[in-house]
Length: 436
Image (cartoon, rainbow, N blue to C red; front, top):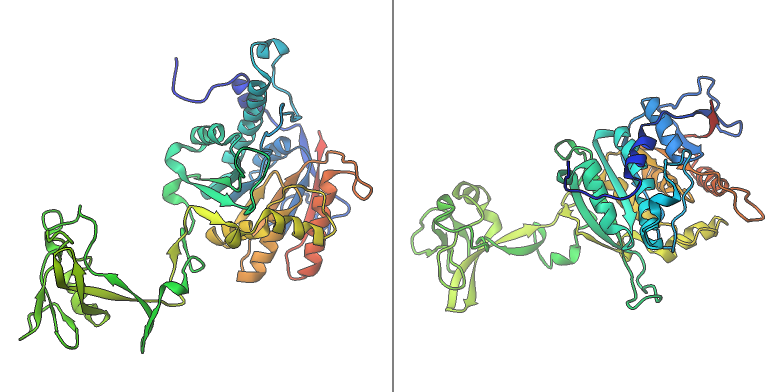
């Protein structure tokens, strides 16, 4: 039976890989700061798991670990061929790929790799949870369809643009200065996430001031023409303005000016507030004379005051001055003496994500890289008093470096250095995958 969806050679094998039982268990490293004879994940520690990430994810699933937030920065598949060594290879032969170009083979391999891991991570995610995936143009379209399939198109929260490179990469026809961040909920009705923050409020928007504080003017008239006396009859009523003091009343007053809501064309409009709300908050309203297309007329505007508790919805473009840049990220690891990663993510990007998700979240990153997610969690907990915990997974692939024999050694070293600077942070335990 044919159905709508993304298809490629190897898709069915990726399902088998995700469903296959793990062939390993977690072994606590002797170098871990906390010894636990039970060999189980605890509720008061951070965890770094060293090993192949698909196998580690399946071990976590079998141990009934559940997480609240997943952030990953996977390989972007920018090369001519994508090569990724799975713990268990799919049942494919060269003949299966014989009619494909090199680029098509690369897409197939990348999609299979991502699908098996996203399937398992979906099982690990709590109903209140969310998943955040960094990506660029090479696989954006495929990844969006893949995540629609696994997490449900109805759970797609946003495709954010992260402008992390203000100067732009000079390699292509355009100087590309952005990437993407796909955001999905496990179950949108149950998702525990903020969409508005105090950070997004710009104090410069509140240019006026009186004895109540700084404020901005907002028209009380609803500017959306879909809202009019026919569609919102209860919001169509006259207000009364004192011609000298410009006070506003919902009730008729002798010699006050009657003002009804109208659009610039003169057509009837409606107010944003009910008559009852105007009666309660009329002290924040004032009359004003505006020069419209039909000449001068009276209108009513609201004094919208700023406050420390005020929030504003975040926009879908996250600029480098807000969430950090690739240069900033490189400096962060260089200052720790770990300048081996070419494209780490800035900790400010992760800290914004963490500020939008539960302060007691268990956060999973199974492409841990240099450990940016771990550092961001430690710093954010210290900043806002949160009790977040991380589970990072990083491979032990060998690297050519004088100081570090394996890529996971860099992750481990960064976490150790950050922990030393933050003595109040929860202990970090190191695990390795041990074959059965």
